[in-house]
Image 1 (cartoon, rainbow, N blue to C red):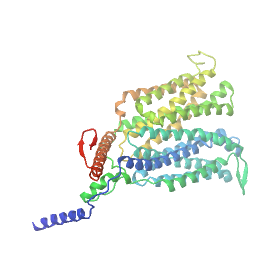
Image 2: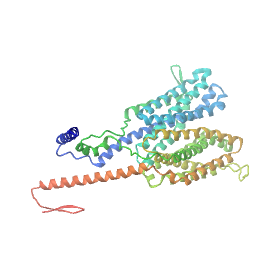
Image 3: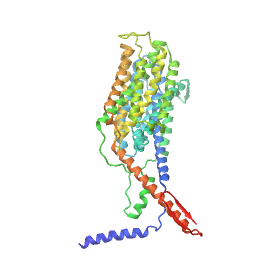
Image 4: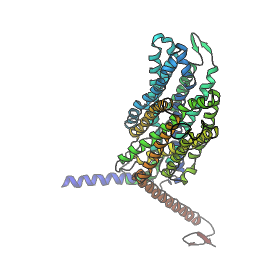
Length: 521
């Protein structure tokens, strides 16, 4: 009995001493907008570094595309036709394997660890790519290993997406994920353009040749070093929670200030809907597969119908890429908040479906409606692809990020990235088989049917793809906290007014109304 009273007395005395040490007039807490600005600024800087990482990783995927075929043929004229497809696919296989691993790592450890490690792996792969011609008979195994390592390094995209999703709330998540998608799209567009410019490079560093074949590897090494420097110097992740101070006085003062140094502790809620997760991965894989088919078959198709070479194809793909970048940019602006993610995704799939109908030639088989593929039909199809792909891919990123529990998204973001990598790896293989061995109209109509299936699945499970309840609860909590801070700010203004009035030499009487404060002399 005495022990219990003794403990209570000790606790009361500690609280009393804490209250005595607390200042009588505690400084006013920072205004809500000041806290928001500082928190938003820190998160925005970290997210932008993740966006930079995704951008440079996308460049690494496409930088070698214009010259890798020639690189293989420079060692053996038969290597290009035999191994180019496999050298391209093995990159996606590396990303497919590594994405869930890095995502899981990002859940368990600080984000910077898997990001820096993956960048180092990619740097080693790019350096090996630049020098693998010196391995003689082992050239093919070395170039496969190099592309695999670069693909493994690209698995950090899962970590970057998870971080950006976790550091954004439901009010700006679509905008943030749109920025992430735009960075990836920009890398896919600028990578081949930069690779084409490197085809004019030829000099030596000592005994090492820097040619149109090896320079993409060396440039990727430099970009990787720059990326590592930016991450190490400027990336400052914040812990998710802190242990509160037990003193009620100090705790009440610091409760408003905690947002300045830590993110709000994520609410504990139910796990995400697993069926919605799998459906989202399927829908995302359809988007990536359709775009991979468009990229891989376009040159073969234009050569077949128009006899176009790399310059004309580059112009077509460049114009399509510019249009896609414009759409990506629009999605990354606050304008996108006016539209629902799922409705925008349906709109994106509809555009892809229309594009594939235009790209089919209808000149053989059961159709035989036209001779060849008119150029106007090709251009319209390319326009619809350039609009549909950025919308559907960005919206699927946003939908997936919102249906996940906000606590730890790394592993499941790895699943999404692996699904896209698998589609990017397999899509060109079956598309080439259909184009060469069957007919291009069968190919594009098959792709149109695949897109239609995605549209129907999205309609059927429309409600299942709604945001996770934790995001809704967190937004309600955030609005309530904002209201409380606004009320405190109003009380502070009122107290300042009273203090100023009491110190005025003229005196006067105070009339207080609900909507105004005034003095009558």
